[in-house]
Image (cartoon, rainbow, N blue to C red; front, side, top):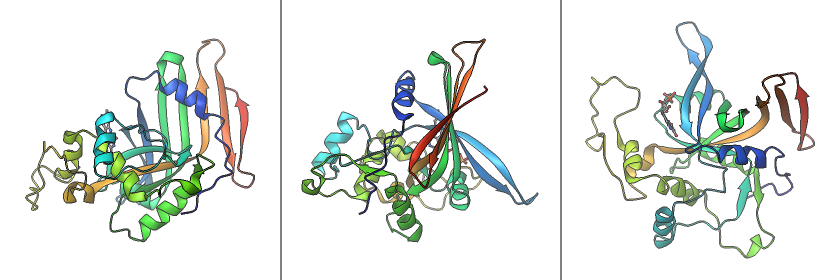
Length: 258
Ligand SMILES: Cc1cc2nc3c(=O)[nH]c(=O)nc-3n(C[C@H](O)[C@H](O)[C@H](O)COP(=O)(O)O)c2cc1C
């Protein structure tokens, strides 16, 4: 696998992490571009999702780490990145929307430090174990944002995409894993699932449960622009826009009128 090694660490990352650490449970608003067939026009869509850290740097719960270790599914800590992640169900609308328009913006409001973070970029969806073309393309795009963590990477055990997705799955509780075996999200309640494996409230221990894993996906956001608003001083808001220059691979920051 090829990974970019010369990408500098994003200059906004450490402050972002410091701010996010103030939140008990970091949730973000995730906006995508949808399409309204009635008016034949693009429409905004937004929903809450749990922030799952930066790709390659997943913080595992001790029980998840143990299960992955026991099942020989634990990847080496080979990579780091500035790409945000969340998990989702392939049957949800946002996945279809992201496959049509990969543009995404996520928003965090951290009242504890009076900061609003808006991170914009492109989102890529991985986790299709059949490894169809879309999966290959998404992995290749994500690779462009990966940095090798250590100098002795050549001696490290091999890192696998499937194991990384499995780690995200393992990091969910059995009940959350079971949500990927629920009836199709967003469909009318009157539509009873034909598949008897699909029902609410299941608890899944098996990391490779075929039905749950068929639906489970990890979304990886390659950030291109960050808009940060600091409202600490009510008389003088401060705002910055930090943009990744795709040619130089350098981040450029401009202070803005709030
Ligand atoms: C606190 C909270 C956390 C949520 N976390 C996620 C999440 O991590 N991933 C996800 O796909 N949906 C999550 N949801 C559900 C979404 O907000 C949304 O209802 C669902 O994903 C369907 O959205 P869609 O039809 O636009 O795809 C969460 C909802 C709440 C209220």
